[in-house]
Length: 314
Image (tube, rainbow, N blue to C red; front, side):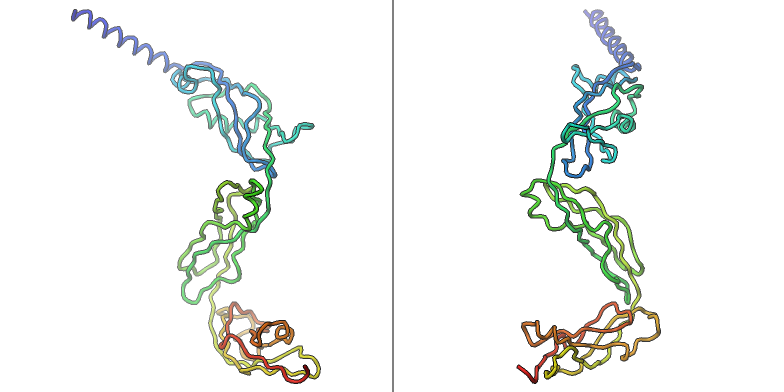
């Protein structure tokens, strides 16, 4: 009985060694595959599956073939990302585009892995039918989280390129989209201009024609100055006078650390109330305008509003 068990164990080990050896060998094989693409065709859904089944011929180990095929002949599903410029409309067939297989060879090889060496692809092109999809064009808004070293500040707005994006999805979902925000542009202790790329915040159920934008933030060193200036009035009709109270306000402004043209003096600046602003306002209090030919980054006045009293006329 013991000898029989040893014989049975030996046969089992021999079979196992034979199976391991057999499946470790390299074989020529044909692998049927279905190809799903993800692309960015304007006006269409992002994904589609090829009408044709692709037959990949190549070499692979028995283990690989067993893992990919299992015990059946169901085609292997491959998913690839492809640029929309490689797709060409199929004449006379609505919403259908062709794609040369030559554009896919490298990505098909990547999908099959290092253990399958493609010798031949039994197709010259694939055709895909994409579902039409509505879209809207909306602005991109920067989400910025920055702090700056003392006496440094951003100059102007964050510049985004492109500054708008096409959003695809169901009409009902698109109606609630008015803008797309970037992911956080986060920097600390900034003391020089910065630039780079930032992703877009996803919106559930919708997709964008791009997944990131370029940003630029101009940063400069500034000097802050405070001076007292008179407030003047322009544009008052004949026979009417506009009295401004107070007649002088405190102006605090930030300018380049080394401004062109030298130091900024009161004669370079003017605070003006336009009569048209007063006439169109719902209140007698208005914000004067700063008029200057010099480069000013930011400014504020104290008090923030001036009272306007009209005299003469009706």
